Amino acid sequence: MNKARSIKQNPTLTETLPDFRNLGVTLRILLICNGLALLQAFLLAGRWDDILPLLMQSAALLTPTLLSCLLLLWLAQPLLGRLSYRNGALAVMVSVTLIALAMHLFTAELFLPPEFHDHNFSDFRQVVIALSMSATLLMYFRWRTRVLSRALEEARLQVLRARIRPHFLFNTINAVLSIVRNQPKRAETALEDMSDLFRMAMTEAPDLVPLGQELALCRQYIALEQLRMGERLQLDWQLNETSNAALIPPLLLQPLLENAVYHGIEPLMQGGTITVKLQRAGHDLRISVENPCPPRDTPRHQGNRMALQNIRERLALLFDVEANYRVDASKEHYRVEITLPYSEKER
Image (cartoon, rainbow, N blue to C red; front, side, top):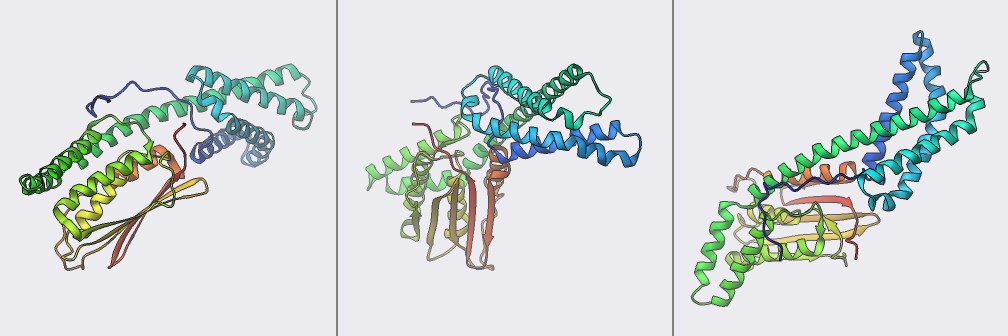
């Protein structure tokens, strides 16, 4: 069994290459490279009218080279992911340089001016430009990874603060005390469930965990809430044969369920049903948590919604533009929908 470790004890950061199959990474590479091409055209231009022709000339060579590099890196991503950062960075730089040089040799006669005869210098300059741009991009993504790593540590700390809520702790203890004499076995199970919940909150978890682990945690949480709410709290699990090996951020579903119980079901005298839908849609995993809402004039708990804001931040940090968080609220229901890239734990 893994020992619980304080969430403040930051592990040594592991240097990793960017995920070249991530849409956000691809967009950033395209924007940075085209921005550098625009800067080059601006520096070489003698007047305003020269900028556009120089930019078009640069783009004519840059675009096929850039797209070829992105395609190669997309195909090589599984191999790059198994290399150390140093070897992976070297492989990226060498691959990009070879592609850029090959493109330049193939199109040199089209883009070099007629009076330019020193082809060796032109080839050398192309190699230097390719190495410089690839090294600059790798340094940028390395810097961004370090920044996001610190932000993720802060996000995990916020998860801990949001997870250990006094109302949940007091309610659970009171519910256990009410049955400890008449149902000691059930009270023991409830205390074990509560222990597992807090251990999960305080353990240094990875960025992604198997869906089956998160679902087990959610069922333990719901069992504790049903201990005090009884038949008023019902769950409708619609898993649609979703694989338990699918990877999601830890403590993603449980805070959504807690929000549904605390702000939706508990204020209703008759209680209600929380509907949890999980389905795979192509390369995406879609998660939906829906609960009924009390009338507008019903007194409600005033929560700070820290956990929900934290979920948005973690999705943005982990998946960039490939994840989506949407809330659909009406007079009768409240639904949170999350879409994130589908991936599975390696068997």
